[in-house]
Structure formats: C-alpha cells, structure tokens
Length: 300
View (cartoon, rainbow, N blue to C red):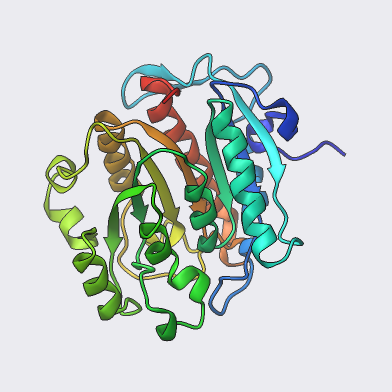
C-alpha cells in the first residue's frame, strides 16, 4: 500500500531534507486535549484531503481570484510523522530537533497537528528572533492553576516566554471559554490581542500595523478560529467564528509585510468532521499559506 503523503508528494527522511522547500511533518498528538480526543488523527485527515488537489506531475495551481498561477516550480516534500509514543520531554525535544533540521536546510516547516501544545517545541527550534501570530478562538494564555488541559491551555504563555519570540499577536479571540486573567496577563506582557469583532470591523492593515517588517513571522493556527459551519471538526468549537476568506486575507496581509518562515495547523478532530469538510479547509489553507510564502521566496 502506498504511503500517504501531503499532496501525494515525495516521502523523505530527515537525512535527505532538500533546501528551499516546503517540508511537511505530522505530529499526531492529543495529550493536551480537553475532553474530546481525536486530534491524533488530524495529520492523516489533512493529508487525505490534500489528495483532492493532487495530480500526476503536479506543478502549481491556477488561482482564479488573481488570474495567475501559484506554487509553480515549488518543492513540497513529506517527512512523515513524529509519533507521540515518545513520552514527555523526549517527545517535545524530538519535535524541536526535527524542526531545527528543516530550518538548517533552509526550508520551511509545514506542521500538521495534533493538539496545540506542539507549538511550543516547534517555535523553540528557531534560532533567530520571531514574531508569532496565533489564529485561535482562545488565548491559550491561562495560568497553570486555571486549566485541566495545561499543555494546550497555557501554550501561548509559554511561547511568549521563549527568548526568540519578540512579540505575540493573538487573532480571532471570542467565546465564553476564554480566561479574563489570561487576557489581562497577555496584554500586560506586551502582546496584542485582536478579537473576532475587531477583525470584522477594521481592515487587516490597520489591525496588523504593529508587525515589524524587519522580523520574520511564524503562524500557529488552531482550527477553532474558524466558524463551526466551516470547521466543525475541532476540539473546542466556538460559535460565530471567522470565515475562510477573512483568515486568508489576514495571512496575505502578514505575508505582504513580513517573511513567514513556518506554520502549524492544529486541533483538527476528524471524528467530528462530517463529510471531511474541516480537513478539506485545512488542506487548502496549508496550500494558500505556502502560496503566500512562495510568492516572495522561501529563504530567510
């Protein structure tokens, strides 16, 4: 049976990572999930959905919106999965080591999760200063004593504390499952919180004026930032979320100002995804982000 890869791309080993490429890696984890399990099969679901966009001798796509071709002459390869059978610190250390190897080869990590706790060891792998942009319904900036899912519920607090993270932008916040203490802590620590309503009411350029053009950006995307009508297959769905086009517009604005050097898509839960509509949106989102990155060149 043929190995399942993103876009039916070439499967590679860590010893043969090509340069100037998009390197897909799956991290099927769920230890940080609150309540509903299933994110362990998120990477598989996204890969399966990506096959809808694959064909022999693939070389990019035609984009009707802009009347141009995208991702032509790009290289996309698949490194396979980092499995959670490794326990505790060893698992997270392996994530960091793998992402470092991708970066060392001057390529872009494209990470398919998995629960949101994996963002911390991924971002830790970058050796230079970064701006982190989080798309999420929830700040994930809770204090340890507040949450039962501490590894995901506190992940952005721990990300913001990393020495290589210059600043954190938190986009799409909404819903009653947020922590008021987490919000105030995040703002007091100098981070920028942009709610769903602000995204609806102000142009992306105004919302993201605080981004520094001189610093690269890493994107971490929790599927619950989307409206549940678009992405029902998520661990903690929140009503009245963002539309697909709104999120892509924000990412295009980020990419026009700053170099995006990697991204993850986390918290896809295929067991709550009738008709695999969520998986299809996440596969398309990954391709759209790659297109934004490729349009200005991959190398940092």
